Length: 230
Image (cartoon, rainbow, N blue to C red; front, side):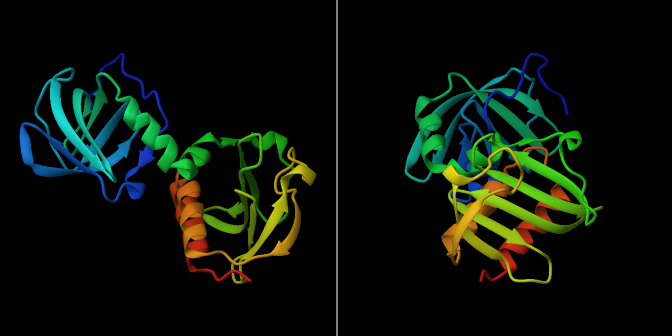
């Protein structure tokens, strides 16, 4: 995919799955509503669109998402046969504030960093993987190839534990009493039930974990969406 050599993504990206209501149009094609593939405070990408213009070309565009309507100046920074990416010039401060306010779970997911396997204790049930933000949010799972045999998620005061074939366990945890330096170590108390909103927030969180294998991600998300907590 051709790309301006000096261009580097500068901000966390929100994926299109979280942008169902976003409408993006170029002023040169005002009747063509383009599907936003991802967006950040510094730019956005659209898919299913071919733009035969030189990299570095300038465009005027409009973006409508929720109650935010923006007129944008944009620079083409990347393109392929079916995808194009633009950088905002200048970056609209309203969009940065909007992302912070409306996509907290996506941003939390992007803050997770994969801990080196050398620092994880081996497990006879599968290969251990730990994504952690250094505070209280994490994903820990065991896998055998593409098959997830166990996972735990800590997010926003909730501790989710799952073995395939068994009901998903959901509890509240006390972050102050937890050992935050070991995967999955949480002092938990009451068993709770996840609401549809809770499940949606967890999906948004997991989906935005950087460098998480897509097949593994899909399996975890499917388990979360299809399981009934007890």
